[in-house]
Length: 97
Image (cartoon, rainbow, N blue to C red; front, side):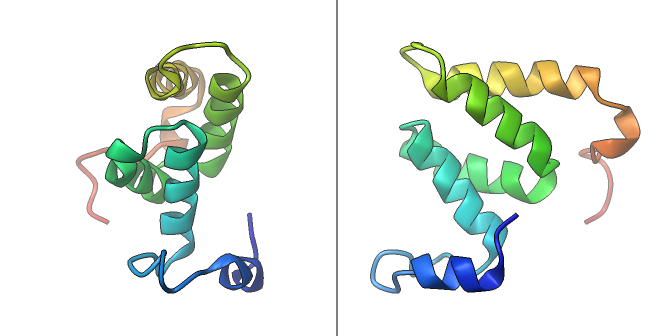
């Protein structure tokens, strides 16, 4: 987890004008790391709702591979990790936020 100071040091108001929270910055980081900026909003939503440890494990797995579509591999690995984790740790899509 990054501190607020670290996020603010990297914040560029001309480029990151819509990023105001840490989970948004992490979602953008995911999209850029996976070369899938077209689906940036999906990664921001995942960063907001999913446990960070699962996202980081799936990201590490996808980046270390030689896959053509790292975004698809990331999503596959994330589904696999969700199945392994206790259901109480992952928020349901039906819960109020």
